[in-house]
Amino acid sequence: MSPEPAADGEAVIAAELRETFAHQLRVHQSRSAHTVRAYLGDLTALDGSLREQGVLALDEVTLAHLRSFLAQQSRSGLARSSVARRAASVKTFFAWAAATGRLSHDPAVRLKAPGQERHLPGVLASEQAGALMDLAAVASDDEDPIGMRDRAMLELLYATGIRVGELCALDTSDVDIGAGHAKVRGKGDKERMVVFGAPAARAVEEYLHQARSRLTRDGAPAETALFLGRRGRRVDQRQVRTVVHALMRELPDAPDIGPHGLRHSAATHLLDGGADIRTVQEILGHASLATTQVYTHVSTGRLHAAYRQAHPRA
Image (cartoon, rainbow, N blue to C red; front, side, top):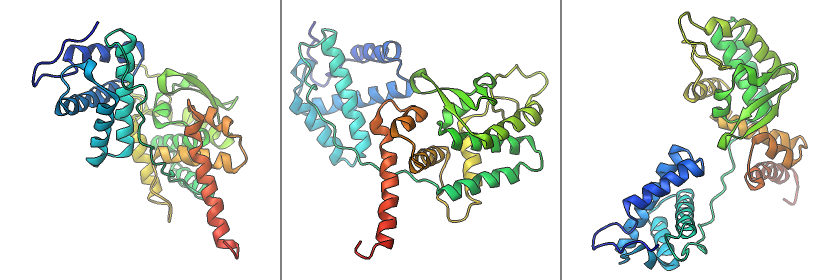
């Protein structure tokens, strides 16, 4: 089933075809609404490039056309990560079109994205992480329920390395304080078990027993969320980021990191302490080991810094 050729000035990738592709992403591949919007935006950019290159029909698209598109994106100053995502969008679209008989061949099968720059994430030193937890503990000493909640959130973020969205999604039934573990729903709605130690267990227990009930409100719907805001509703990611940044500002000489920086810190400290990289991969919920390996670069970077400072022939 070949697509109809586009008239002069018309889209090469027809609107109906894009909508069918979007349905495939949403329903059959369980992609998020954000991802679907990004992919459709990438196809719009591709369509403009194809028309500029004189392409009139989808089955005229070649690997050279697609490479030219990515080269244009790079020259325009688009970040490497964004160009790489556009390459992924293009490859996904053409693979689907070929697999469903909308194209006789896949012109993107040999398309390669530019290598992405790997930025070492900002992390806390272990002493700074300890000082941050101490700050949170001091802030909760007046038994204000928000202060106690904030301490429990920070302890759990650093202890488990979970994402801020995963923290916000936790229900009270997901956490077993006695066993020291929590059930987390990660990307793609995949569940995994994360563990935490005594400091996080104490902070969460104190919050549950002394603070959480004071954050519920009469007349508000029953809320299963572990962490609540002042209005008795599930805490959101923006609130958690505000809490972390506010406490970080009180920590001298520390990088201004957010909740994701605590995740980076937890992973780095686990590896520095001798944890196996595959164990860290499982804790963090990474689908690919390559994603976890960035943290080995952080640890190696510290080794190099110490070597250059201490060795006479560094």
